[in-house]
Amino acid sequence: MTITTRFAPSPTGYLHVGGARTALFSWLYARKHGGKFILRIEDTDLERSTQESVDAILEGMAWLGLDYDEGPFYQTHNFDRYKEIIQQLLRQGDAYYFYCSKEELEQLRTDQMANKEKPRYNGKCRASGPLLQDSEPVIRFRNPTDGVVVIHDLVKGDITVANKELDDLIIARADGTPTYNLTVVVDDMDMKVTHVIRGDDHINNTPRQINILNALKVKLPEYAHLPMILGPDGARLSKRHGAVSVMQFRDEGYLPDALLNYLVRLGWSHGDQEIFSVDEMVEFFELNDVNVSASIFNMEKLLWLNHQYIMNGDPVHVARHLSWHMGQLGIDPSDGPDLIDVVKVQRERSKTLVEMAASSVYFYKEFDSYEEKAVKKNFTVGSDQVLARLRDELVVLTKWTAQEIHQVIVDLAEVLGLNMGKVAQPLRVAICGSGVSPAIDVTLALVGREKTLARIDRAINYIRSLN
Ligand code: GLU
Image (cartoon, rainbow, N blue to C red; front, side, top):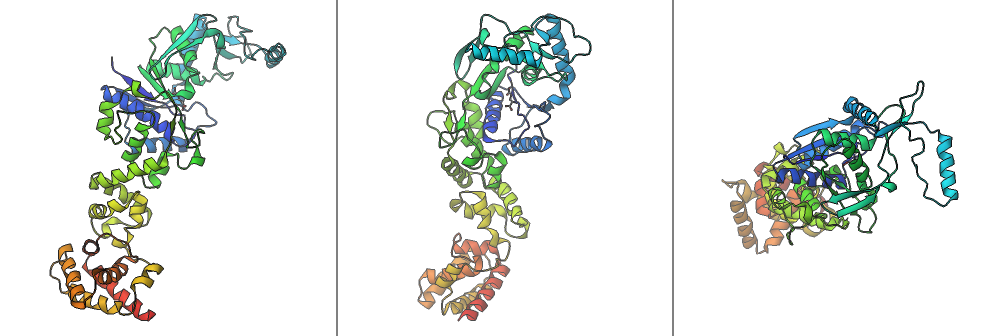
């Protein structure tokens, strides 16, 4: 048996962290077992589904690297098949045209309320019969009236629901379009999904879906319902807790692997290990290690993880993602030093790629102005002369390397009887516009000879204009 999982988002918004975690767990389970992972877009709610959301989901999946073996399938392309199954259920007597009027249902509700009963559809108008002419009834599934449904949930354990708690679900609307539970069942059946891994907000649908699958006489898939993700205040995670859309994390400078690592730990653990490569996730992932209780989204931990990935990840990989952020700042990274070298010198100090990009602009582009505080502190009287001496020494260097540059700075500090900072800091402000940068010799080596000399000239003129 090929293990087959699916991610089945409704395209009614962006791909949020909850959806991404469901996708990740389904993906991991398939990858672990040499199985198949399917992407299915559940777009039958025509009013709420948008192409923009479909694009956002596909973009999010691609950015996270959650590749699918089949799909994306669109439920709106599969209406004929749903109709076929609805007809089959009607023929078998497992579904029926429903002719109660709105008024009759209202009356039922009023009576139930008066009798202090839970208002629910009670099987009124359940009789079978052909479609009456000139009528547009909905179609209901004939749910068993006695017995129980047991969900053997791989996360939550056995859950038993009495059939008398379940009403006869509408499986086709008056206009003939199928409803959510029907389409899910048909697709899971046709796609031979072996493991339905989804959020536990769907757990109420599961016994209904099991009953339909039983009526269709197919083998049930295994179910695993994932606990909710909450914000730090204990409320369901939402926009007001900060970023929740996967692509917003990209925009804020997170690496996809850091987010994946964060997501895998949301509700799943493997000993006390915190950092997992994707290969390790695949190797260690087990559904029965998923927590039963809800997990809390912790931005600080995600930020910590991101920093770990930036510091310890392959610089080529980090540079590839940094490149996008440089582009966002209007910088073409081919206009300066190799971005991989920039990553190597910047990564200790950058928790996000947004920070790294912002503090790497001067490698590629002239800055507009000097940071005021840095000017006050370092462009003091006489600093122009220090810079002029530095320029004289630098211009004659035969090799433009960090080592040679370092020697120039050390030697000049000694000759002038100044401490290193008095030489290096004005130079740093001249080259970077602020008092913060990686080691100054490395910085100059990356900025390059021409730009360095031009910026020293610019700083000398600036200092002279001040004093
Ligand atoms: N389309 C449903 C949703 O986006 C998921 C259905 C399922 O996974 O069974 O919530």
